[in-house]
Amino acid sequence: MKRIIITAGDARVGKSTTSKLLLDLYLEEGLNVYAAYGGHRNKLEAYEKYLTIHKFNLQRGDYDEFLASLEMLDDIDVVLMDMPGQILPEFIKFNRSIHFLEGLYSIGYRVTFLHPISSRTDCIDYLKELIEELSDEADYVIVKNQYFGARFPYYDGKAIEFAINNLGGITMFLRALSKFVYAKLDEAGCTYADGGAKAPEAQVSRVIAVIERSFIFSWRNQFRSILYSEPKLLKYFGLSF
Image (tube, rainbow, N blue to C red; front, side):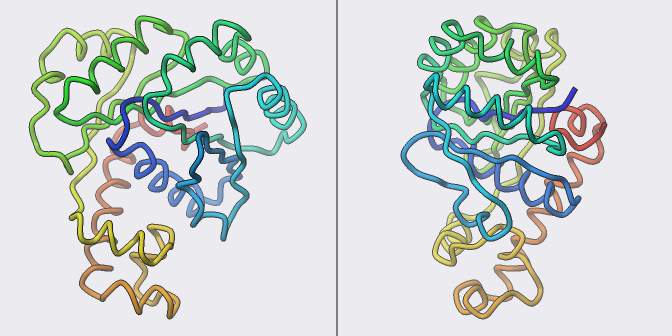
């Protein structure tokens, strides 16, 4: 089965951040990626330098076009959908009405939900609602985003963590990157890989200093090391076949 990674969860917890880190990896590995975003803002815009970023709304027309594209483009290795925060109720209604996950499965794709969390209870509420609705119809990667701190008191050792484990899900860390460096990446409007390059384009080097590029490079490397140390993460993120 090929993989479709869909971001899920609360707003401003790192969904697009993790999507960008994955896109960098896919591009580095030479994978043919179908990338899409939902909502009003394309947070993956910087990656249009390297691939097409499609628009996807939770509408029947978009779904039919999306499914047809996946069936027609049989050379796609992995699909990444960066969806906006707090869209879960709408997604559940959409899935019930058109059997979204079933349709994807019927053409050879299984969904991985990429669900970052912080220390807020809202994150866990969304996660509970997601797995109660979809259970084992999909796989789950929970990303503990250390940008918000090192403690996750509403997840660690709680029933929700055991529920994720029982469904075959896996939990990983996303190491912290400073708010200042994030701001520099946004200002430069570049991919994370370009922001951490030793010899970036002039427009990037004018905004992101050498020491900041070093921080970005190290941060990306930590993410990559975590993924490549766990076979299940590679499988769920479509990096192994």
